[in-house]
Amino acid sequence: MSPAPANHPPQLVDRYGRVVSYVRISVTDRCDFRCVYCMAEDMEFLPRAQVLTLEELAYIGRAFVELGVQKIRLTGGEPLVRRNVIQLFRDLGALPLRELVLTTNGSQLPRMAQDLRDAGVRRVNISLDSLRPDRFRKITRVGDLHQVLAGIEAARRAGFERIKINAVILRHRNDDEVIDLVRYASDRGMDISFIEEMPLGIIGDHDRAEAYYSSDEVRRDIERVYTLTATTETTGGPSRYFRISETGTRVGFISPHSHNFCDTCNRVRLTVEGRLLLCLGQEHSVDLKRVVRANPGDLESLKQAIRDAMAIKPRGHEFDLAARPVIIRHMNVTGG
Ligand code: SAM
Ligand code: SF4
Image (cartoon, rainbow, N blue to C red; front, side):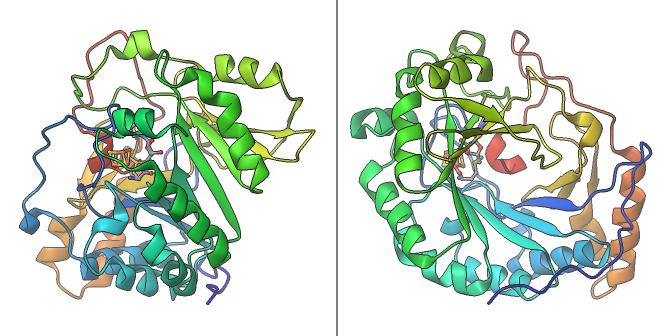
């Protein structure tokens, strides 16, 4: 089933006149992988009482849609490892959203891809940093490449409108696979985005400044083989898009360090603990879990808390690779 088009007027406008139309929701901090740039090897996960229930997540999603949000992305942690998560997709898929989308590591797609498509998910982003099984295992610490590749094939069969591969490129880890990943995506009619590593959380695996491989370097690697043409497409986020002239593949570069995107920011994030984060790189937040639990069934008080939150959305972020992370949250809690 495809969701109906958005029909709620925009009500979420911040101090700088930016309209918030996009919410990224982290549905769990847990994951079946331990990617080196995302998590420490020994992670302590949140106790269940601290995490929003699936019903609370659907309820908050409804409030956002009534406030004019048109796009919801479910992410995590790994959203598909949360028990019964398909019900949340069904509940959100029934709302008048323009787009319900998902970011996943792909491991559960062999069993879930078709149900997700049927629930109304239009597009999926699947993370894939290497096509070599041993290297894939090293980057994810525990992941099985073949399971993820089978997940990507299941997603292709399920008929999503678009599938995008997300790759984080790290120097001396997988920077020699840029072309192989582009070829893998374009051979299958998928898009691909390259993400620069962000300093979120203390990970203890590598020196982030040393491993940093910029979008400009990835672009230079691609242009040794293909012709890239800039497109004007924008998502109001940190992505710039190009097309490969030879194959038509869309290539995105997500570059929080090298290119400023804050002026057109249209998004907020909901953490798994129900904190509404107004900016990925800042700590400004509002505790929506408290609002929901203190006022059961009172959707208007929740909507008002979200409207009020717009007043503290900061103008922009301040990432600095050389400094220790000021943001102690890991990406799995924030929702990547
Ligand atoms: N588990 C799902 C996945 O891996 O796609 C969804 C959550 S994950 C946090 C979302 C995206 O964030 C993934 O593409 C991952 O590669 C990326 N990511 C995680 N930690 C990051 C970091 N420190 N810097 C940049 N990207 C990161
Ligand atoms: Fe899990 Fe995604 Fe983080 Fe990897 S990037 S550890 S798959 S949440």
